[in-house]
Image (cartoon, rainbow, N blue to C red):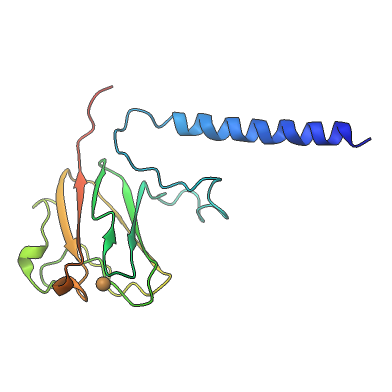
Length: 158
Ligand SMILES: [Cu+2]
């Protein structure tokens, strides 16, 4: 009697996949070419539902780079930076903490942010509300060109 069980299992997997595809489809309307969900879904899933689920992710790499270094998001989106290297990095948008104040910028209406040290394996999140361009740097590797940009684009279309 193994046939009924395996058929049921196959059906369950099919339904799960279909549900996953449908939930992705609900997000149409945004043009951001960023899909941070790895194939097969998030192992473990994001902890703490209700907290801002990051709309996009930036990796802090072993090469002392932000990847991607330019990211387009929508107002209200949360971006998560994750340190996937072996050394600390920072996400610095505050000219007071940057090596060169001209390396960082943001809309005048938006408060500046600074992660402080993000240790290997740790993450930092920031929610962007004001439309505009935010330039930031890693204060530890700014001289090596570890800089990035978040562009918060207004919602357009239906
Ligand atoms: Cu760094």
